[in-house]
Length: 533
Image (cartoon, rainbow, N blue to C red; front, side):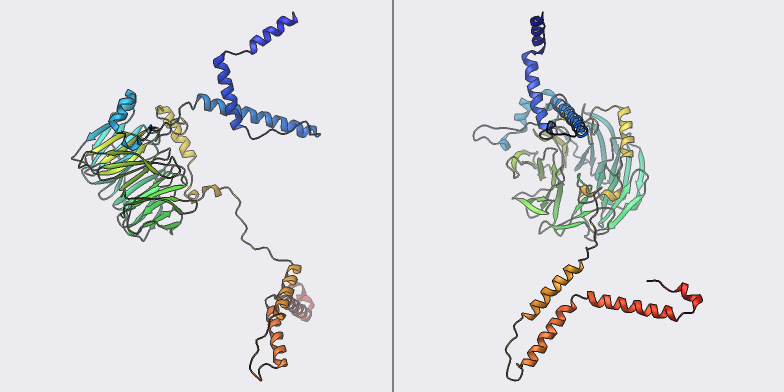
């Protein structure tokens, strides 16, 4: 009977081949999430400490196993890039070649909307990539559902539209029009007219702080809180008009590009720029930030694109021979640059950015704005004749977090998420170059006073150095021993004067004695009011 029971246990432990492979794969992933080697519990003599460490190690093992399962089952997709064989180049592959190889759902993301009467167009996407907002210079505003390619709302404001931007979700969006900036609802209803800003050139929304940032024609930077409508800050940049504005997603700092070739970075609690970088010898055409916030790309009129490391504020790479009117980083770090009727995508496969893909528009189209669609391998292009969409393999994040950005969220989920965003809203004071300093200890600014022994040692060293100074040999009559001795005494006294510890002590003692004398001269009835040292 015992042998039979052992055989049954062995049969239960043996798994099918597929499950064995999954188990081995989970073990490999679990090792990746373990926090190093476990503590050696056998060598411990303290029973209480041994129990505490055992429970802690058990907890670490459970968390590593849970993380391995999440990676295995909830993050199954991986980003794919174009790969070529032999001497073939990825930037020679055209959109027509890609369309033949992809599935039907992906091929629907290749289209060209021709609206020649209202262009050029500016584009913006929601954080989930589900909705797109297009704004034509001639006053055309369109809200599109990118999942099923349905037109949600289309309005004509009948005046110039310079820029458009979504607010915290697809229910509200802002448009920079001829005289003022306006906020509209999803159904096209005008909700607010922001008259304090004047004629706005560029709009950007800081989603973590619920701030609508804008820069107007005369170079004034405004921050407005959209939760209660008050103007948080109004800053005069002093650099003149600018059409280049971008927000760093890492820390919420706003960057402006100016005609003098400088890029300035601002926060709402300071009237002076946090950083002022001389990036180009001529006007700055465009600025873009990497999703991790550590890289910045700038383009200038001198036909150069520069990559900057914002941790050291140093230039990392210069790409020659390409004037980019507009720049955009994808979630995976690809850089799109557009000018004229040509769009070029740069990849950082070998550490430096090099040509990855290129796309030529119809002759005569003038690119106005390029922007990658989140969580999709799609690049949106706004141009003078409407807007277009092309496929860029490997540009989007393949796995989305439904708590951060859910393309399939219901109206109930959207309302709950809006409440959570308002509760988690960050104050404007948290905008800074290094947000990791928030919650850290501020270093003490007061210098530690040296001890009396250290002062005496430094004093002796200074006196010895003064005594060891060699005197210059002067002319007859000026090189007498008495004069040399007098000069050395003066040098020693000057060296002692740099350590006024004793003199201060003598002065304090003198003051104390004067106070005691004054107190002694007072009558008995007033002695209790005398200052006590």
